[in-house]
Amino acid sequence: MVWEKPTTRERTTAAEEADGHQVPPPPGSTTGSPSGRPAAPGPRWWRRLAPGRRLALGYLALVLAAVAVTAALVPGQPVYGGLSPWQGTSTVDLREAPTASGWTVDLAGALAPGAPALCLRFPSVPVGDDGLVLVRAAPAWTYGFANDAGCGSDTRQVGSRVGLLDTTDGRMAWVHDARDDFADLGDLDGAEVLSASAIGPAGDPDRLLLRTTGGALSKLVALDPATGRVVDGSAPWTTTDSDQFQSEGRVVLTGRQPSAGGAYRYEVRDADDLGHVTWRGAGTTTGVVLALPDRALVSTPDGTVAVDPRTGREHDWGTRLDALVGPLVHDDLIVSSTGRSGGFTAVDLDGRTRWTTSPDVQGAPSAARTCLVVTDVADDRVSCVDWDTGETRWSHDRRGAVSVDGLAGQTDDDLFAAATAGDDGSLALRVLDGADGATTSVVELPGGAVPAATGRTVGYAFAYGSSGGRSTVVAFDRSSGERLWVYQGRLQVSFWGGVLVDVDVDGVAHELTGPAATEVVAPRW
Image 1 (tube, rainbow, N blue to C red):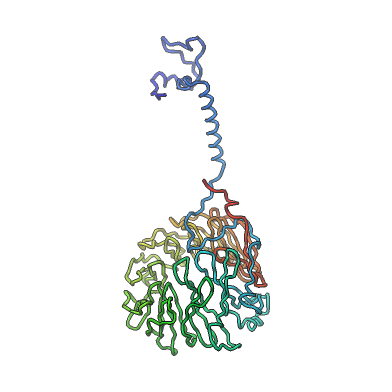
Image 2 (image 1 turned 180 degrees about the vertical axis):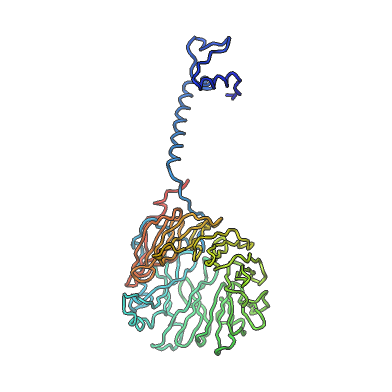
């Protein structure tokens, strides 16, 4: 079929017919078909169609009209992120209020036998991306659940044990007791795991590094993640109140101040060989050091030196570490405030300046997925600085934010800006689009709540509960900001390996479970 441009007569006829006029046929024309019957109504292309095709086109028009009406009536579909989980671990999506119907594990019995469970809390450290966490017991205030004075004496021996928990099934793989790290430790001498971290490739560490103390001594211990067996360790040293410790990548950095007001003395080790000190040297009286994945930075009276942990070789670093104000490390950048002149400066791992922001960018910095976020509470401004160039990608006033951060597990580049919303202390959590800073949704939270983590479709905040701590979970939809549910925890709620866990007053951890997001949120095609 060929479309033809209408003649002048055809255009005039169409206009007159639209006005309701009877139009006489042109001279020499017929008013009907060759049989003398009136011509079928409609344009010539329609009259040329066979009856069956006319019927099919009529049905198609009805279907298209129905689709158009449906699209107009159905609201826009929610939009959720599709990136990999930020910071490695995927967070569970619980679209409906969860129940303690998953696995359970007796943490108090495994990590602090004999201690009153009400006097305990259980901090954790993630180990890789497979849902493994190191958990230890620690004394804590009980906010009226038990006699706090009694807790002080009853938890004197608490803190020496650390266990590897698999959050996929609740299995405690092994437990290590720091008391075993020290020979001739008396029954009355306390022992404690001061810190724990993973060593090796991101997501799949090959060692676990513990800093432990027993009696008057401290030492470093490396464990096999699979078995919990001790595979390496340092010689013990006498513990002091001025002890410093940092570890990052293969770098293990320890320091102490031999006397009040004196210069710090530092030791650098390779994480693969804790028994061997590759470098010893003096720092400054202020003790400014920084462990990077492949080097240790030590401020000395003559400048800053960078130390290779494998060889112990040192060389001058590109700038003075003690001149960096509040350094923030992100990938291969070290960002710090420029000082009184305003703005921020980024240097690379060799100390060379990479970029400097505009002096107008001032406030508290934090690392987000796609930019350095700077929150200026005094001037009520939030700015997003490009990691690569230092240029301000966007800046917005009147957000009322007191803090702006990314959240672990998020699958987009959004930012979460917390602001006071009313005289009752309630909070408004504004979700900002990382691309332009536009507010995409607002979440209403009770006073004192803090955003904790987010899955692909559900975000979570911890609020104060009956335990006196943040033991209440508030869940909200990541697209609309609408509150989905509130869960009142028993004593302590936490995200371990992306799993939501509730620890009760008996020291038993319960996995909180509910319908998976795919069962509640229809897939988008």
